[in-house]
Length: 216
Ligand code: B16
Ligand code: MG
Image 1 (spheres, rainbow, N blue to C red):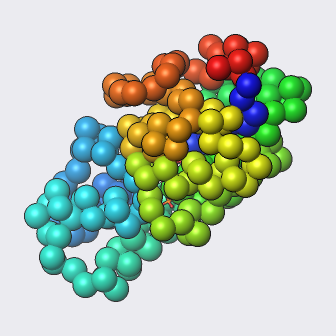
Image 2 (spheres, rainbow, N blue to C red):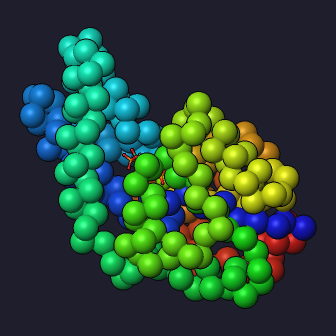
């Protein structure tokens, strides 16, 4: 019997990838690197600094900046990203999310957020769903980013359940690999790109029956 749900945020609860893309694209242009929407797929679920490293590698500029210059670039991107987040409202929850969270609450199944985003608490407030999650793992407390299982194991520990009692939800391959490496049942949420290794694939959360999931 499963006892808790662990959700990725971007791509599962709401679509902030479009704002990450706009902010990274603008930042990249200031250092003469071009990225497109296809390249952006590689940044899903990847931390801010790792995303910057991938963009620099894409532009053959991995060695062009000092650490403090890279931190300034990441800060510049985040300032723009947070400006874009101001427009988020509860209408930006992905289809089926509210229904799924309401059903989980009725069954008293605790929910956690395991997002690589340091902006997760702000995003949850803007979406008016902060109270639906008992736990939001702070990625700043972790050693390893996705696909390492650390964030999912930490979420399970904070929920007070064993990894094999948790169900993880992810839209990015890196995150899905992390859920499976943590020994959890994995729901893959499709948003365009293929996903490999999920126990079940859906397009929206309300395709799932909570009772069937809990019996997995
Ligand atoms: P921030 P998730 C991830 O969110 C995004 O998918 C990824 O594109 C982003 O770089 C990362 O959060 C860090 O976000 O710059 O706000 O700390 O999919 O793990 O919910
Ligand atoms: Mg995601």
